[in-house]
Image 1 (cartoon, rainbow, N blue to C red):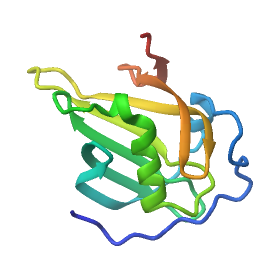
Image 2: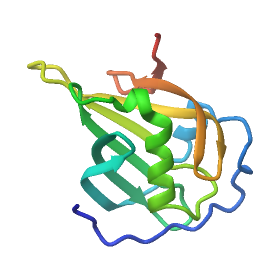
Image 3: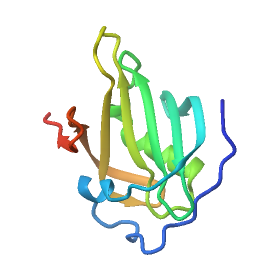
Length: 150
């Protein structure tokens, strides 16, 4: 494990109470702030899956987690998103009222194909537990996020 020394961010003042309905993509994008890499674990384990975890934090800001996995690993981040977010939240930012902003990065073995970054928002959150994930893919033109169709 390659952990960078970590500051545990405080619970965000004015954050929505746990257990409320989820946030929108626009609300997540409004959380933009300067953060620094505090965890870089190349083999983070959450339940039955493993992935590279990069956690970015700043005092008074919600943590941002980037989970990277090869597309042929199983179970995929998409299939176990809730348990992966819960594990990161509990282990690395347990004092925050809301889960880390969750970004999945799927690496492809296909030559020339760009990695797929997906923002995942959750319909509900309680302490260290999330439900009802929704995935969005970044628009390749850099203009924002477009909902992914199933």
